[in-house]
Structure formats: C-alpha cells, structure tokens
Image (tube, rainbow, N blue to C red; front, side, top):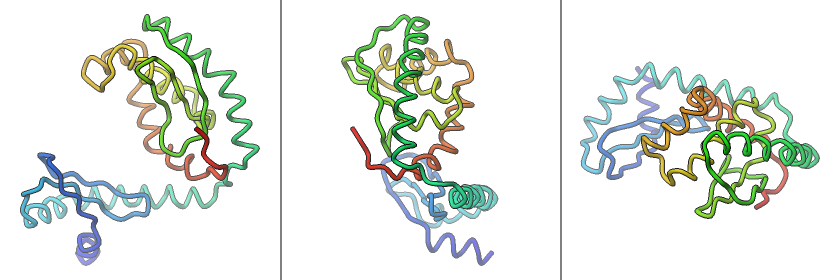
Length: 196
C-alpha cells in the first residue's frame, strides 16, 4: 500500500462545517479531502483507505483526460469568435423553445467566453451562456439552457428546481455529467482572453 500512503501524505485537506468526509481528485491528479472541523485524522485516514479503489479509478480518469488534453489543439482566437457567432444564432432559439415549455419569461441573452461558468441567470431574468457550449453535444447546451431557465421559477437548487428541470428535460443528469466530465477539457483549450 505504499502508493496509497503517498496519496494520503500529499492530500490537500479542507475542513469545514460539513457533516461527512468526501474525496475529490483535482485536475493535476492530487487528492482533495473535505472533512468536518472536528473529525479525527484517524477516521479520515480510515475513510481514505476504504476508498482506495475509488481513488485509483478516478485518478486514472483524470490522468486519461490530461493525456487527451495534450493531444488536443488549443482553441485559437478565431475558433472562439466562430463559436460565439454560432452560439448567437443557436442559443436564443433553444432558450425560446424551453421558455415556452416551462412557461417562463426572460430578459437579455449574452454569449460570453468564460473559464468559470457555463451559464447564469440574474434576478431580472438576463441569461449568460458560454460560447464553448458550441463544442459540446447539442444536448449539453439544452441541459444548461433548461438549468438557467428553471432559475426563473426557483432561484436556488431545491427539489422543486430539479423537478422543473426533469419535467422538460428528463435526460438532464446524463448530459450534466457529460459536462462535469468533459467541460474542464474544453475550458483548458481556451487561449483567447476571457470576456464578460
């Protein structure tokens, strides 16, 4: 178990007011441990040891994604501009389609080149979307559009919020997972300066 010992030694520990221990593999492959403030180290180490298979599997996934990234060309400024132009033509149509299904109104739609968010909805109903969504499957764009429009019904991530999502887009979890698994790769291919 020397590899696991090494993983534990190099793990990043984040203590907070959470109730349980959780593990995450960072993009560079190191382990992040999130633990309750008063949780004894012995308990945390036991949890990590019990999760050895999960750590190995998910570390391998991150390493594979990083290898894929090395083989991918970074997006040029022209690529980003082309995606933004394409997004301006496609996103408003998808927003209109799902807004009607949900029975909600919305304000201005803005397309941005961002490294942190895929979409956002302001309290006034203005919607922002990342142009990189054009490099993802169309269902991923729909999942983000529906997510943001459902904030017109619930400005939170409550059970009711997710019920509204599933009502009009039952496959939300599948495409949200795609974005979680692959979105980082798309963002890391950006070379153009961030806008917005």
